[in-house]
Length: 259
Image (cartoon, rainbow, N blue to C red; front, side, top):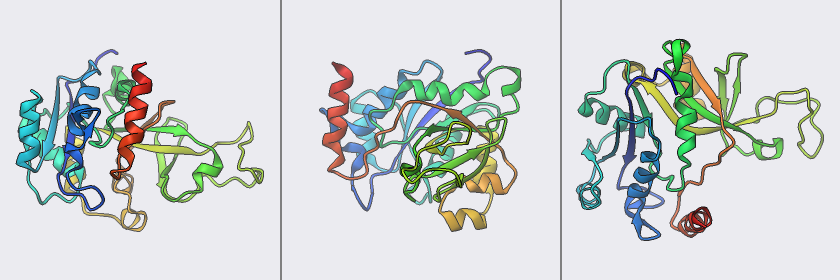
């Protein structure tokens, strides 16, 4: 991968969670989840630093015990992106560097996804890229769920819109939700983000927009303010941990990957 600026992977790890308190410290095959995510992100060779950003001394202590770099951030951040920004400032990230927000509840993250996420920043054309994210093809039946965020792209792989609605709507799709060969099928947005440090600063300074408040999707703040988001297509899937009962499924996935 050519001509990449310095790249930082930052893993926000907040202790309090309404559905799963202490989630970053939940053990996944004997390893705390936040450490698992750090290990996976560290397998991507493009990062100059991989760091956990936390708000809790317990997580900081566990990171130290596992010899994993971590920084303490404020407890009052409204989102993981705000926590990532504070951590990037603490690390001294340069304005043109790339800061990746690595979801802290993805212990089975495929490192190849991080490579794909960074691809838009490569080469001379990549110098103009401010924000990148990922998407993957899904069926129209899957796209019907409002829990799955969809994205539509322009001819240059930039996001036109993100929505919980089933976009793009097809007048020709059959009753089973299949896609016709000549139409644009739905794309599932995958919540990994890479920001230029300067774009991350700008994003955090902007107020919430109407579309963001309506859809409850913070990435719409960027589009509402004419900040383009480049989207790389991946064939990999994510397996997040939202509740305690998800841990066994993740452990089974990891066992399969290791065999």
